[in-house]
Length: 113
Length: 291
Ligand SMILES: Nc1nc2c(ncn2[C@@H]2O[C@H](COP(=O)(O)OP(=O)(O)O)[C@@H](O)[C@H]2O)c(=O)[nH]1
Ligand SMILES: [Mg+2]
Ligand SMILES: [Zn+2]
Ligand SMILES: [Zn+2]
Image (cartoon, each protein chain N blue to C red):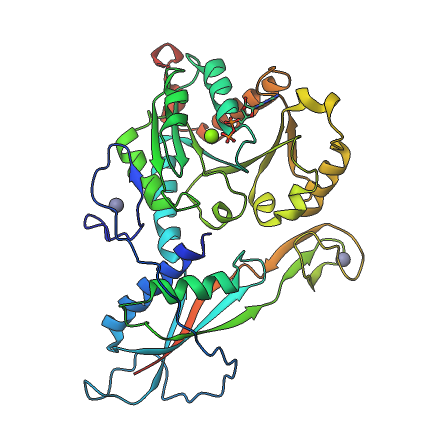
């Protein structure tokens, strides 16, 4: 379950930012998580609660902004929306797709005190 | 938190890298949060917002815009640069537990010993059994135990490379922790991920674990010696693999019988040589190569 490592990275970035941007309490953390980032949101919430304890992020809530999956279809020559990596192109039915969006894993912003 | 490099990787143990890596978290309870999904919060200015009295401030938004695994990616970039400088071909071997990574590696090392300089980093949650199996072939190997961690990360690999010191021009095999999910997210700085799938697993693994199979540049279908005894549909498996990664190269082999091994060995030789074009490490006389 790599959500533990992901949560540790999130807390580490927040702690660095707390120092750099001068805050001591985080209320809300906004994350952008792509559909194909391979993250179990519930596992992320659970591990974040555990690893954020005794940090400035203790007790903060996670808000997840899901980034949809998109792929470049070589046949159609354009970006199309897909739900799964192995989905066919919704327009031409082909499989010549290259994922172009949905792998994001970013901390976007924080609401702090 | 690692005091040498500021890393926080829990309970990792790396052979030959003996600083403390144990900052245990106690896994007692989880708070309950109310995960409301409203975004109608107030923006009190964006970006560095430090213009307020210290202590009790007003609530404000702080823009971060950072990749969560940015740190891993920076370590990975460092490893990749190091490998390029030294002419090292690093291959990250990923699979479910038991697909035959270690067996394939020992067969590969036996076959290539004396021909190419080789080194191995072994990742497992516990024990140094696999590194011992590798060292029995005569190749230098180093074990990383990740404890509860389910993947190697670029920082662990960086430390392992420091201790192992693979020779210039060598092929460095990194056997990741057996897991088709988590290692997909952690770039180690390798040249290629090689995903191993054995015929005793379902032929639909590529679409069950599409993140990993898409990240892999080569798929090895192992244990083909067992095909006569199984219902495994090779054509279906190849079709699924191609759906996830159009045109992906798949090598079918048996690490134990040796069937198909020559293709894999040739892939390693050619990939290494292609990477070493113009690099001084290629000019190493093969007589100087130690197994
Ligand atoms: N029949 C057969 N068994 C294999 C083959 N490759 C590996 N195995 C067996 O599969 C089991 C797991 O192999 P191992 O290399 O430890 O897998 P790992 O967990 O991926 O490192 C062992 O019992 C191996 O002997 C193969 O090509 N054919
Ligand atoms: Mg193994
Ligand atoms: Zn299309
Ligand atoms: Zn360290």
